[in-house]
Length: 245
Image 1 (cartoon, rainbow, N blue to C red):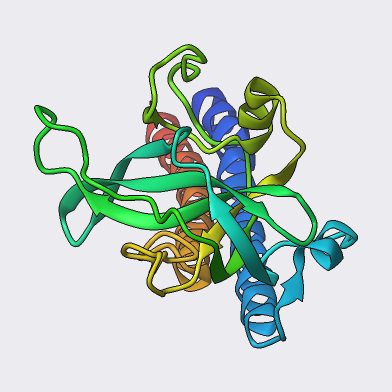
Image 2 (cartoon, rainbow, N blue to C red):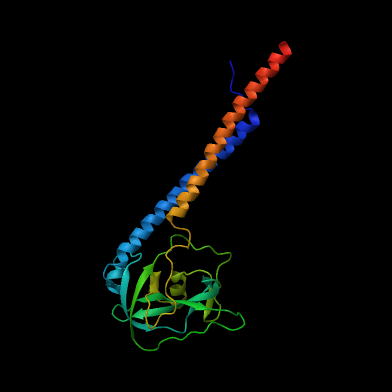
């Protein structure tokens, strides 16, 4: 009778790698489901009627809600979100405080993308001085933005930043402000305002494809382990047979 003899080294390798491969596969499936829910939620709320800021403040889940604003910009405290790439061109996104007249609430409004081809000169933009009617929508980051180091709080204005953190800005300015970034809809006060909700090429189907790859690697690992175990056992059996002969 041939016994299964994979050996210690292959067994330890499988015990180390198989749980990792399965974890990565299920993690990718989880990410795919998260993005499906995100896209469905976004699509549903983008067709709903816009709400006033007062209504927005009372919502438990404001993400992706459309909002109607009437008020003015604060052009003295502009943020430039660095390293934004559009169509292969490097630029920034312009964010400015906006005060809603009816509620008195401050919101950090993202006016869109600006090209910044040369670091020798600052990005060029203008700020409307009059009262404006603006439609926008609430953007809620799916996680904490990644930063190599925190943005300095004492940098001059307009301030170059690597992450959007409205709460820090309101604390610095001593204002009551909305906690999430608000993104302007295309219009007279907007620059290039066509943000992809998720990174290009990283939709749910991409995560599902990655999950299939991880599970395929796990299956291949188990198959190789079984093959080595039976093959090693057969070699030993044949070797013992030759010795006894």
